[in-house]
Image (tube, rainbow, N blue to C red; front, side, top):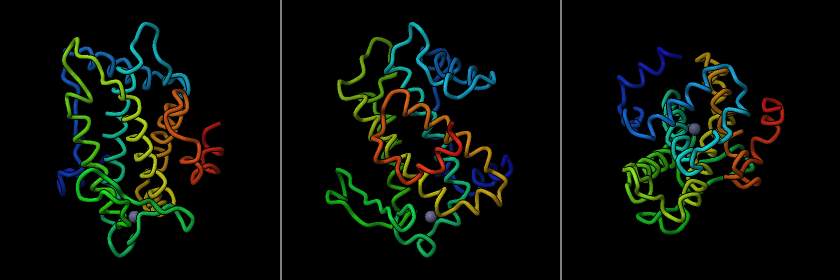
Length: 216
Ligand SMILES: [Zn+2]
């Protein structure tokens, strides 16, 4: 897996971690705290809980950025195999098809190829998490009132990356020996969104059976 990530970095800087927490900031300390409990061997269901005394929006912000970086890297490792020919439609098996909509080019939901959808999705999240009005990093600047709504939308769309990758590119995950790594990221993500009810249950349906198997 390490080798694959390195190859991706070398080949295409699109899939670099796109945001880092600045050392010395409060958010960085919280990120370190979350990382430390993640590595401590505690079960993933408990590491997602809000630590006593911490602000929920800060906690969500740290996780959204971290999940974005990790899921972006996971998709990056298989991006070569997810192309216009293999995946002309952004789907999750025959039953689920996702359309892209944004405030710019695609004001009406558009049927796009998976790689195009993913590129728009990653750029869209990157611009949001780097927007000081949405993800403020300065001390004392409050989160916007719709912060959790925005995060719900980001996490809902990130979940679709898992759907596509698991259903259409599971063979790539296996051939890279990345199954355990991807499963751990998925479980962490899943417990997090359930803990704070951040993604609608209907969105989780495409991976329901797998989730029941691995998240018990
Ligand atoms: Zn694909």
